[in-house]
Image (cartoon, rainbow, N blue to C red):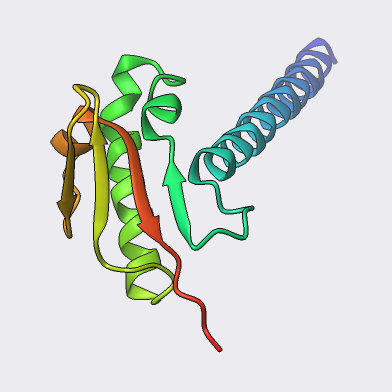
Length: 123
């Protein structure tokens, strides 16, 4: 009887902890999506988009930044493959100069303040 009670208690505590984890995970995921959308500047009518990459990267702990850079590259590559954006980027570096590139790398993202790209409008 005590064993069964303890198992039920443990199960209910686990469920509560899981619900709390799920809530926090969903909140962080939604927050990340909002931040990414804001940083990508996709809500504007302008064809040239400004990705505030430095702002986005610095919101994450240093341990996660390499993974975030890879995700940014994958996201922009997918947008290129889907023909939603042009294949070249204009990168404004932290030191103030700019560069035109077709391929992004984690190092370029580290050195970047902003990344500009153009949206393709389908008619």
